[in-house]
Amino acid sequence: MKELRELLHLFACAFLFYFSAFMVIPSIVDITMEALCPGRDQCSLAVYLGGVQQVITGLGTLIVTPLIGNLSDRYGRKALLALPMTTAIIPLAILAYDRSRAYFYAYYIIKMLTGMFCEGSMQCLSLAYVADKVGERRRATAFGVFSGVSAAGFVSGTLSSRFLSTSSTFQVSAIVAVIAAVYMRLFLVETDRGVAGGGGEEEASQPLCSTPSSDGESSPRLPALPKLPSLEDMIGLVRGSSTLSRAAVVVFFNSFAESGVQSALLYFLKAQFQFSKDQFADLLLIIGIAGAFSQLLLMHLLIPTLDEEKLLNIGLLASCAHLFLYSIAWSYWVPYLAAIFVVLSIFIQPCIRSIVSKKVGPNEQGMAQGCITGISSFASIISPFIFTPLTAWFLSEDAPFKFKGFSIMCAGFASLIAFVLSIMMRAAPPTTSQKLVNGIYVQA
Image (tube, rainbow, N blue to C red; front, side, top):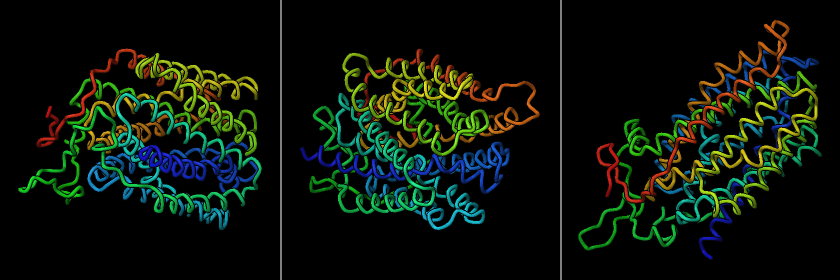
């Protein structure tokens, strides 16, 4: 019951955080277009600036998230969670105050900087927290519940934005972000990194950063950090298992496709069907409801019958289908139909994170999740260099042929590659007793 209460506090923090973050998404396209290209439905500058933001944020996330995950292995999840949850408040407060062009550019710059700490760290640290509290047999379901709670925050935030004015949306979002940070500081309990709360099968695993002292007692749980994690440490972690290596490649291509869609979809819908804030909110609401239903109910029912690898395959196949359907949308209702595939594609993240979590020891969870997030960020760095000019080109009047969804179809092919690679991935038995020795992972 104690572990359940602590997880519920984490879920409450995640719900508030994502409620605040996703509330502003339906409005941001209109604000960007109004600041950069007022009165127009197409704006190449807005597309390119979105791509630049993705690249810089992804580069920062690639560097920062594995570091934050590794630091959380030594200094605790709660201590590091304060970083993304507090920095996320700043850009929201800027647009809550004013949305003129000058304030938009201030928001744009601050958002890039704070995104380095928020984009991947919140998920990385939260999943490491869950792994500390839940045994391996129940971990995939727990990851699914966390994703479902995040999707519920997405739904609630999107639904709220549907009924709020643009100015009120950013004000409410900033207030909720403050409440989330305060709630985390007051109620979230620090973990023991899997020693006592990880479930019966992991009780024998001791933190690798603790060593017995002369009187037989363990050293303090939070020892001084001897050195920052090196690139060799991260590579050693991934290369230590064929399953981790293949999972990393699948994550790369899936994230490459997702980043491509993020940079293209909303501007494609704006140009193709003249979608506005309310239509964006409706579409995102369908996606969020489908994702929350799937994570909180459907995945819980399927995990005992189908393991993570099969659900990962199903999720990636559904992702291919819905991207291809987006790209050939011939009427305004087709994107709403395509959004239903999220019921299955939402399986991807919790399944891949569970597979990775089972391959490392209890006090490498932060670093492992950080490495996977870093690989995802690396894909998000490369993706805009391809999809941003491709999207701007095919949405412009100079397109070589009339196919506004061409860049989204290309993202669908990247997702198809991830699906093919996932079929070849076979998980080995879980390992919970690895040690890091001079940058190389060996069996304890």
